[in-house]
Image 1: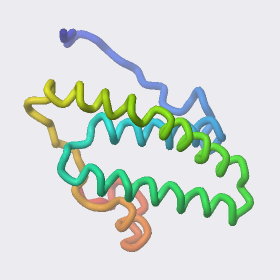
Image 2 (image 1 turned 120 degrees about the horizontal axis):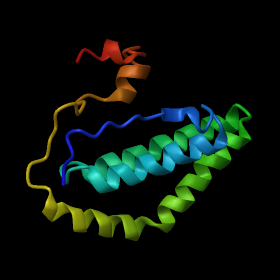
Image 3 (image 1 turned 60 degrees about the horizontal axis):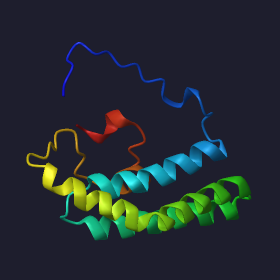
Amino acid sequence: MVCPQAVVYHVGGHIISYGSPAKVYRNYKNGLIMMIKNMPDKGFWRKLIFRLILDNVAAIRAVLTGNAKEYKAIFKAHIQFYGGFSHWMKKRREAKPMVNNRNTVGVYNGSIVRDYFINKKDTFGKLGW
């Protein structure tokens, strides 16, 4: 059902402060869940595994910089993700038949990681969309 007259206001990160352990936890956990539920089959496992590796690099960086709270938040997010993995895969299988015309408008085809760290594109505008 669609209601074109609806107006939605998204407050963004105003409820949980930027960089707080709760925000870090939700960003990592929800990002992984979103990948499982919405990513197309092509390259799914490769991208998911790469994402998990990057998350572990971030966790190691947190340890090396003495940010124990960030490390714990990432670790907790991964524990929750792995614990619910079969549930999210089931949701993926259930949703797959309902997608008959995947909208790829706005999907970035490059590598944000490469563009940020190697090509020094540190703002959205520098990505060249």
